[in-house]
Image (tube, rainbow, N blue to C red; front, side, top):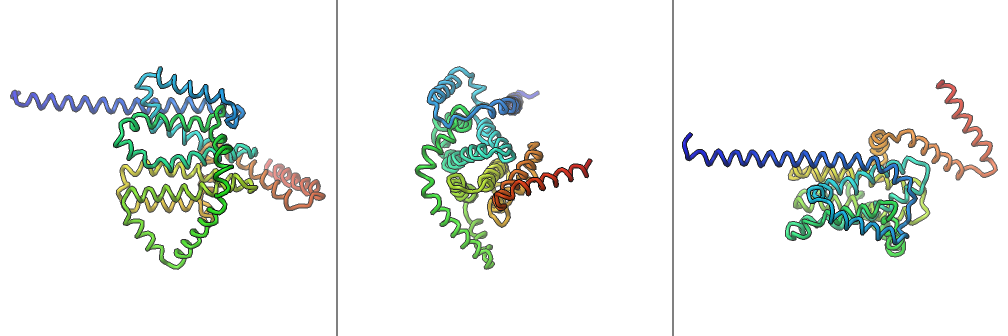
Length: 356
């Protein structure tokens, strides 16, 4: 072998070793994340049985901060890099709440609907207001190194029943300060939505679409996130702070579950196809489809996809039966309740006997 080729061979071998190490690191991270999902799946049933504190127990918050500090000081850096990463934040801040929200919507108890809707209010506002953090991280080493630590612990603080940060934030901030302004803002946003629909019905949708396509890639992403966050946040706040029906709370809870999944898919796919002009248009249309009343897409996706995947179909049917009962109680005079409900029970029993 000529001597001038030895250096090139060594460089090739070094490059191959580096690529092999990178592949090994990726495989290890995937394994760690799978183990984390399994661990959280085992812990979730236990946590769901613990009464939520509404964030009123100060010792719990102190214990949480002490545990977070111990985790940062004692856990090896390799493990921290896996925990405090986009994957770790995704598991804790999105996947677990999505599953818990699906379970909440499919159970008869209404309190868990409110609890998880309070979580999504804070999480949605936090996610929207920190969209620019990636840009800051590119120019700040400190932010790049510690942002995921903050995001991980904040979302964990929001959802744990001990700290119950979502409910605490709702009681101290949303209800006293944000709620009074949301009704008026919701009416204004609905007025703008009506104007947009009038434009659409007039046949000028292509103008809006072409304007959207002329925006830079980052601006198009921001528009999608804004459309999927701002109005739903306002509508969810109105639903949770007013004497709305149980269906309103449940609808917005299903919306946040569906939109979070859509956001995950968009966040992953934009690395590969984000530069294609029609990509964000599809994401925008899917977002609007989820929350517009004329489509009611969130409920469609929830019932046909998320509920069967989570194994909550039977509970969903029981919830539907419960809602039918509530509707009957509201429409039928109280003096007729016993007779009508007795007949309704006979209808269910007769149907069961026919199946047998």
